Structures are given as C-alpha cells and as structure tokens.
Image (spheres, rainbow, N blue to C red):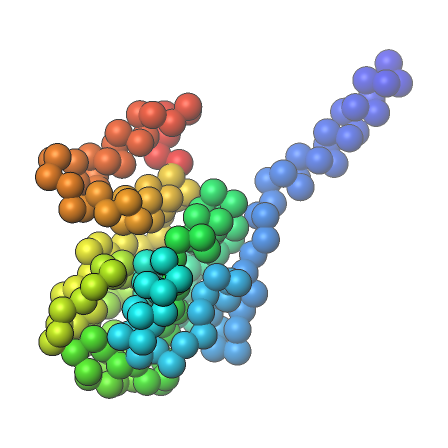
Length: 197
C-alpha cells in the first residue's frame, strides 16, 4: 500500500510538469518573442536571401506584434516542440518583422520602408503571418509576389510542421495534384493518432 501511495504522489507531481510548455521564448525590448533561431539582420531581403542560400536554408519572414496572443500561442505551444523548433532551426533562415515596427526593410524590388509601412504595402493585416520565400527571387518583384506560401495565423503543431516541411521539400513545385491542403490531409491520416496535430 505504501509503495502504491508513493507512486501516486510521484505521478501527481509529474503531471503538471508534463503539461507545462517546454520553454517559452523570451520577450525582447520590442515586446516580440525571441527564439535562438531568429536572425538579427539589416532586413535587406536580397542580402538575407543570399545568406540563407549560403547556409543551405530557406528564407522565411515572421510578422508579429507586441501583445499578440496568437504569436504567444505559437511561441509557447508550438515552436518549443523539438520536432517543430528543431526543424525550423535546421532548415530555415528566419527574419522577424514587427507589424508596427520602425526598422527599415529593403524589399526584393529595392523599395525601402519601415516594417509597418512594408507590412501595409504587402497587405499583412494580422499576426502571426509567415511568408516563405523561394531560393531565387526575380528582379523587380516584392516579397509577397515571390512567396511560395503564406501561413496566415496561428496553427497547431502538426499543421505548422506540415507547412514548413511542404515548403522545404518544394512540394509546391510537384505536378501531382497534391496542394498543401491535400498534403496536410494525407499527413494527418498517416499520423499515429490521426489528428491534425
């Protein structure tokens, strides 16, 4: 009986720890969440693309804002998961953008504006919004024109990982009729638990 009670006590202590997020990202002075895999750059997208390509990674732009509860959800529940955060760190060059920021951004077409004005120019309306860029961007186009995919909003672990995987594997180039939604549906059915996450 004593042995059984001690096991229950240990379980009661362990369960809340298992339910807690792995590690929440810290907030920067700008009020945005910071992760080790986000890059500090001059936000010149041509230079960022060159650096991403030199590292064998894909360039991705994360739009966030101070106080964004959906950004917090992603940073507390999704990105800390090793299968998501580890995949992003290994395969992506992440540049964070502040929806209301004043840091200058130079678009692929040479236009230079503040983050907030660039967000308006690109039609980014809410956060998080993630733009996935190709390895090569033609002259004279903007980031949203060049983007191979846009992830508008907060999603769970499975959906997020599937989107990052779909882009990294360049599945958008395949002529097999499997767009992201069909790919994601297939991945859901392949998961052991059959859920989106």
